[in-house]
Length: 413
Ligand code: NIG
Ligand code: FE
Image 1 (cartoon, rainbow, N blue to C red):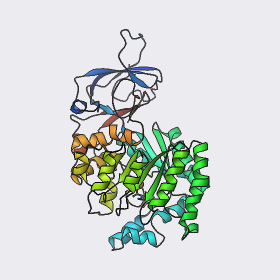
Image 2 (image 1 turned 180 degrees about the vertical axis):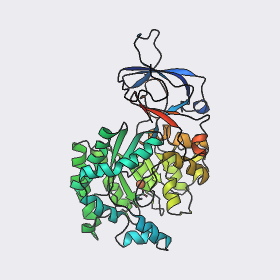
Image 3 (image 1 turned 90 degrees about the vertical axis):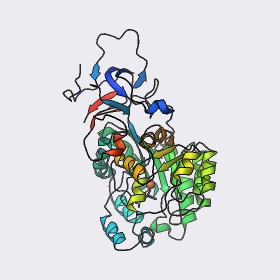
């Protein structure tokens, strides 16, 4: 028996586990999914949740949840967690009046991080990412998406993706990787962005697909990123190589990247502050998730709000993510993003919780295996000292996570 006080932190059980006295919030679709259950048992076998068998082997390990709240493990579906360097200086420049886009045009912004990331080794990138990952883990994260995009050469993009995957050897967490080679035009391709798109399509995507280093390809479709035609070329190539697509779209202006992402059956269109009615309709007619990144909205002091009411009206699933990155969202705390999505964007605490569970899973193409407490789903859970799930969006900065279950293995905080 393992008590719920953390006395058995070395515990590891890949085969079977019975969690008892769990007050669960399943996050299945419909209002039922947000209700807190009566204390119940959860049975885990080989990393998956299963119906309780009639007879349990006598030696089945038991974890007593002690009536704590159990949610699906949180999923951060959009991060740039792996990078080197620090851009506090740009934060100061912005506060002294220079806009983000101007800093980017002068070779700062993303390119400043590219310089530092290229100079770092794969191991250094892992070490730099760990404190940020630990922040996410403390906020209940069991699955994190990590993008490349600060290497911008074949070698450096691969180095970033390998570093992202290597984090799984250092922490109990599921990492999902996304190739974001089309994040910025690298310095050596200035004025030749089409040539860089060719490099991405002819060399980087094929290699990343062959080595299975990423499951999706993302593009920063923006005036300071890549235009619609270039974005489409990358999407077409990604699809040819069997990879999913997603987009950084409508963050600073409305180029139509969201509709393009929907057209290519993208998993998600992310940011979308400048999305218009047409773009919302494109999402409504697709299976693409709208991912909201309130940290970047807040940190850039953006005033254009994403079209939440329309998204809600058209029943488009909304995910919420940290967008952890050194330029626009230096925040490694997913529950803080839940709070911001409520206070800044007007989401309800239920929408916020769906945004980091079932809808975040959908934004990663994992809706059938993660983000809900259901038989057959992965046994990824978070166990909290929390009375009601609205608390996640309400209080910030207090330690309320007591344990996580990742692929059926318990880890105490
Ligand atoms: O999601 N929009 C582009 N990419 C990041 C910013 C990256 C950076 O500034 O380093 C974002 O906001
Ligand atoms: Fe981003």
